[in-house]
Image (tube, rainbow, N blue to C red; front, side, top):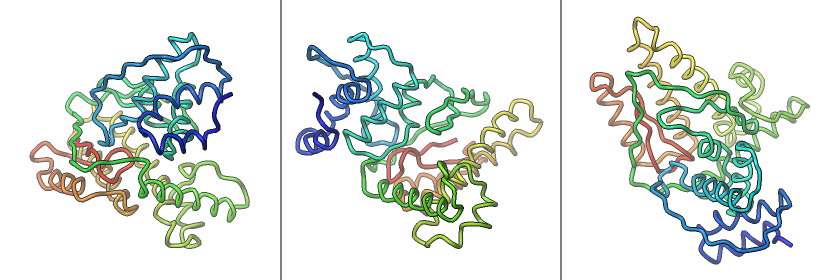
Length: 288
């Protein structure tokens, strides 16, 4: 029978850790879908996705292997479930506490389009095309990033602690912080939370509002008589998001420098906003 997840994690920690992303696909299919593999497999891996840059190289690898294995062994699994199973590879076999956003993007992403996702747990709402006047660029900070790192893990743990404390205060189970409005959070819960968990708890609440507003503005751009004003607000939302990551300790000197340089050049140079991507602590900066 298949290994327990904990045994698999221990095995890959003492061997080549990256292989966990590949072999983990087989283990997750065995454990979660009761798939029985009667033969081994040779897998050629070729990738142009840079490693440790906050652009979802791990999710790309998991999803690519998941697509290949299910096709080769004639296993029928829907796209959303492929994303969720790939996330389980990273959570349970690799041991990195990531969400499902990167895996959903690897499954459903399309060139030059944004995905509006509701990660509760994994729903693709719609695809968004950027207004023709706008472009997004990714700039490498030169600092390696990892969602398996201590900063990301401790921040995520503090967020879940805040979620549990709010559920206790409310005396009702709350599944997602993003469903709490900033007004409710500030009036009912903020001062009742320990200082150590306030910012990690606040981040998904305010980030969700920023995302909703970002989408509203994108939808208005094409018909607007004053698109530059909308572009400025789009950029400010990105700066606010970066400030929130900074408050969580998930920024880095390299990413901060790029964001500051973009802000300094500003709209006069055609630069409207910038923020760190992925799980933070290095990696890539997205520039509008």
